[in-house]
Image (cartoon, rainbow, N blue to C red):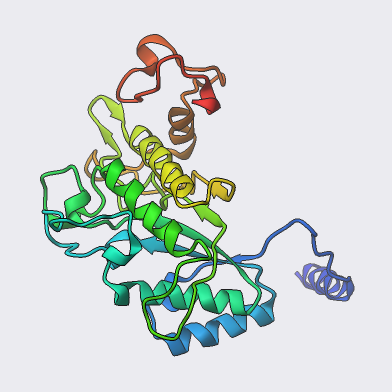
Length: 281
């Protein structure tokens, strides 16, 4: 025991004495939506100062669709609402994200934004309780419009509705949805026929890319597959998470050998495109 303690102490001393070898390509990314988005502006700014001191390069934030959408608890989309126009959303609901984008830019940090659920009830394809609707079968067309509005707002040329605050900064890094292999973010995960979440997510990714292209972000860094590594394997079948490896194979229309799915294997619930080519589909 004594020898082990001495050895541990020696290793700790050597580690402390060794110079830090920072990678030139590795990024330091921080995420805490509770502190940076859902708390007060004072707490956000104080936290951003701390992150700058710690050497954070990028701040990652989930953009909760329902937090900016009008009438998010209604099952009926507002009459005449143009979801692709950021001005059609209540201006005050954008403020929390505007402040984060401005604050990060002012400190020389990048932003990585992830549009995701919970979503407004009127964008759901499920006839269920409001709690389930916020994550169940998102309408790809409505999601595309939401992402387009988000991209337009942070295109670098959009003027803030708040008087005197000027043009909002540009965001050039995006990831699509949060943990789509978890029932708490996307449902149904599976039906009796098998996993359906990968096919639902594939539709959302395509819709989001179209929305980003339409708002001038076609050349930006666009990431996908922000999956959870593990999850609860019990509970209702619609919520039971899809294993990460299975999710990715189904998303990319690949079998266990890495070959493109064809024939019956490519049909629903996987929903692979006709003539799918694995990762290129």
